[in-house]
Image (cartoon, rainbow, N blue to C red; front, side, top):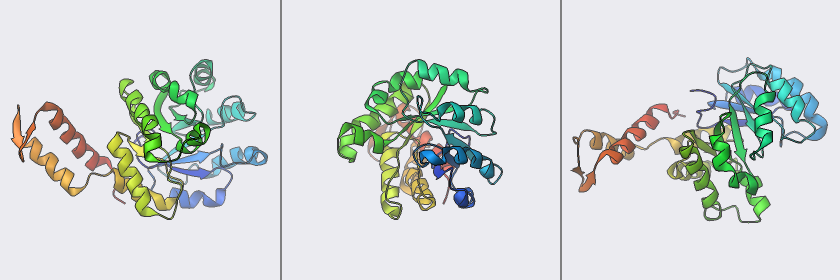
Length: 270
C-alpha cells in the first residue's frame, strides 16, 4: 500500500521523539509526522531536526504535515521535506490559487501531496484543488472546519462538507478522501462507528491521533462477513439483469460487489 492510498494513518507530534517507537509499532499503514498543530512555535525548529530520528524505525509509509502557507515556518518545512526519504506531504488549510502552484514548484523533488480541507474557502475550492495535478488526495479536518463555521461537530452538520469532498475526489479521479479524526481516544466503539460512517459516505480512510484507534478504524472500513457473502452471491449469479434474493442486479451493482471484495483484501486485519 502506497503512502497515499492508506486507510488509518496515525499523527505523531514531530517534537515528541519519545513517541516515535510506539508510532512505528502501532500497526498504522502510515505515520504522519506533524510539524503543524501539535508543535508549539518555540519547538518548530527542534521538531524539524527530530524527523530524522523517525526515519528508519518503520517499514510503513511516512508522511509529513508541514506548516501552512504564509506561516513563518512553511519555507523551512518545504526545504526540509524535499530532502527527506518520505512518501508524501500533508498540506494544511489547502485553498486554491498561486500558493498551490508555488508549493509544487518549491518541492525540489515531486512529492505526493494530501490537501487538508479545513476552512470554508477550502471547501468552496475543493473541486479545483482535487483536480490540481500536484494534489494526490483530499483529507478533511472536521475540527478546524466546524470551529470556523460555528456549526456543531455532528454528522448531520458536516454531511454536506464530507459529501462534497467525496464527490470532488471522484470527479478528479483521485483516491477517495481521508475523513477527520475522532477526538475521543479511549472510545474504540466510537472510532469504529465513525470509520464505518465515513466508509458508507465514500471515504477511503480516516485520520488517527492515537495508536488505540488504528484497530477500530481498520475494522470500520473492512467489509463485514454479510457484505462479503452478498458480494460473492452477486458475482456468481450470472451476467445481465438477474435477481439476487429478490432484488434485481445489473452491472453497477456487480461493480459495487467487486469493490467490496477488493476492500476486503486490502483493509488491514487488526
